[in-house]
Image 1 (cartoon, rainbow, N blue to C red):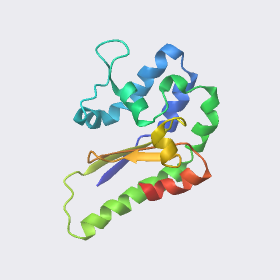
Image 2 (cartoon, one colour):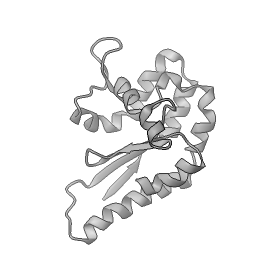
Image 3 (cartoon, rainbow, N blue to C red):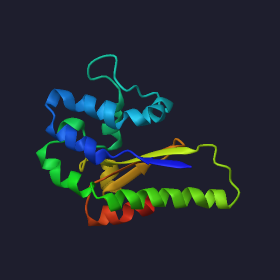
Length: 162
C-alpha cells in the first residue's frame, strides 16, 4: 500500500507569491491535478470551458476550500501552520493505521495507492462553521481531502479525523 502526501503548503506558498492571474492555474494544475480522477468521478473538469464556469476552482470553493485568489500574504501564518513535517507524518500514519485495520480483518482493499492533502478552508463557509473549523472528504477510494482553519484545536484533531 502506498500513501502519498500532496504537500499543499508548498503549493500555497507559490500561489501566495504569484500574480493574481496565475493563482487559479497553480492551484488547478499543481495542487488539484493529482486528484483529477477524484474530480472526474463528480464530473468536475479541471478547467471550465467558459470563463468563470463550473470547474475544480468553483467546486473547491463550494466545498469550503479557500479560493486560490484569496491566498495572499494574509495567509502566511496559516501556510506556516500546515508546513510542519510532523503534522504530515502523523496524518500519513493515521491513514496507514486505518487502512491496516481493514487488512488485519481480512478485507481486501482494491485500491493500493492513496493520495491525501491538507487544504486551507474559507472561514465563512457554512461547512467549516458547522464543523468547528475542519472538514474532509474521502468518498472516492484512493483520494482524501482535509481542509481546515489551522489552529491548535483543528491541527490536534486532524489526524484523528483522517
